[in-house]
Image (cartoon, rainbow, N blue to C red):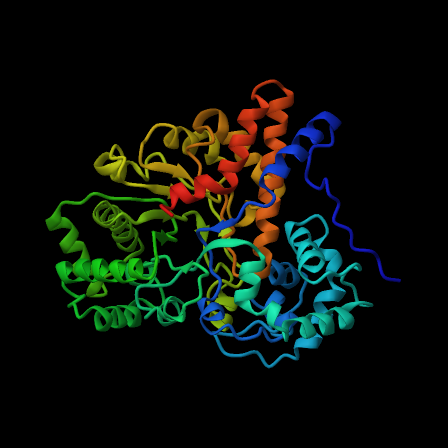
Length: 470
């Protein structure tokens, strides 16, 4: 027997009636404002070519590590789910992968993934029944039929979702051909990139050597020379800015920064390039390069994002078989007070610099991050991220940071997703949670309703535009 799919209009709002009423009114102010998605990992090729998406499994399941990491934890293989291995197309039958996904829907009860999927099924495809073994084929076929039509092509969905801006993320060794194609196509949708230099900064990155070679070819610089290497970064940053980038992104294991003398920095670089790389030396070079990136941001205005504290690709077998970003990133305890001090000593008091700091270590919110962002002009707090971009994670973020950093040392919400259709669902969750938090402040007489209305719009729209210089 199939179960109905119902999106309750008061979902995520407070249970207490007076607060729920205020949350409902605040949500009415922001539910229709355009989506600003200033950081994510969707594929720019979708918007460059505007080709139809293939099928439900390829669109909704295979790119979404939130989904298949849960299935993998219950013994379901990535191969059976159609997840590509090292970029090679999967040989799994998409319908069978979808049936397997449907059969395991109970695993997602209580997770944000279930909420996002229900939003997609209901608002994008108009389904009125839940995904289950009984509805797997009908959902698969209905999605496939829809994807074959013009209104479900990438650009049409971008416009339907009311996305004002969408940022992707590319490495310095990438030619940005899809972004050039988008820019030259005449389409008015704004899809920009972000500069993520990790492959040519992290000497422990498996692509470090090949990426450096491409880096040299693209820039015409001798990247084995310290000054040539730094100039190559400047050249690529300018190329990224030329296709709309306003930010850089740094996914280092820790938040460590360093401020070595020019002589010390060059000596460290020569050792790294020569292959004399211990874990400590690799960490020091990453730390120094965050400070170098901050120095460059003062020149070109790009906003820095730092995403530390993830033990990436923890599952060695999956990493060797499938590559990066397959759901095996694990949060780690992360220090910010000491780690960021060298960079902050050098640049932290300069309001021209903008550094957005994220964390997977929630214990750092009230102890370190809120006090730092509540003091240094250059620092802003990124929203609850990865494991914490969930209703409870968002609430914890607001509860632990607002009293010290306020709302205006944060940057609103970004979805950080590879799953395109989940973008409006994720932003809807964030808006509802923020309206619920604001409603509590109003009903506790800590915030007036006119202030709450203004803050709600700022969190949903104005703060990300301002923080990312959009």
